[in-house]
Image (cartoon, rainbow, N blue to C red; front, top):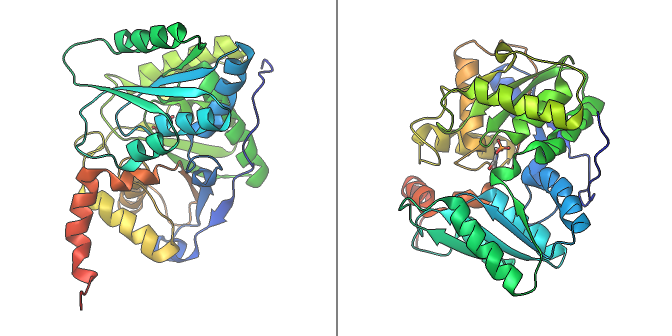
Length: 329
Ligand SMILES: Cc1ncc(COP(=O)(O)O)c(C=O)c1O
């Protein structure tokens, strides 16, 4: 494994916590790894990836960060956070609709000083918009640095390779379950946990890939070459579950909200309705179906994303369900 450098701005390790009430109710030793508690801009999984991107960006003399995602990208918010902390400019480019209000991640992006370029999906390639932002920065005398969607390339995945090593200092066994979006988090963990006694399952939260395992194999092989890994894997080695997308990416889903309410009311852990809520709802389903066996030690990786709770489409559904408990006297 080659030795990559990062800019270490996180207070690590993140805690691995036991959840006693849900452990009892679900009949499993249930743990949560708190990557939501990482320390910049509201926290979340993307910060571990950004430690590597920031080092590379600084090495290249960058003065501005550009990234892409949906309008409510958590990765965009955390890129904005890192840019703010290190005195850089930041633009997030999204082919997405303006949701009608400045709230959730968009509000936090702007609070931290990042700009957003929102462009309706009219067939314009995303990279054309990125090129325009790059050109504008260059005209202003800035040195822009581009970070791909979700920070999920070979460099970004190193952040979760590190997390896998960190986790193995905290536990010798268990079954890690994590939400999968652009896959960098899963891939870093996969490589770092390979052949260890800690098992890994990813829960895909939207229908992003035609064949998720071939995408994973290709991503793995890119990491293998780039990092100099000394092992090979097969298509069948990936455990990424595609049956819990619940009808789409970032769609409001009742069972997900119920899962969000449950863990909040029993363990005071706050999840988001797009990623971590879907992953936890999947854990509940896997326990109910017997796929997760009674007594099996589960480690749920909390990847952050809480600002998503204020995305108008999610918040409206929750307001309707929760209004009943408010008495106005
Ligand atoms: C809160 C949250 N959890 C999980 C993920 C998935 O991580 P990855 O894109 O590395 O698969 C994301 C990605 O956007 C996220 O924002």
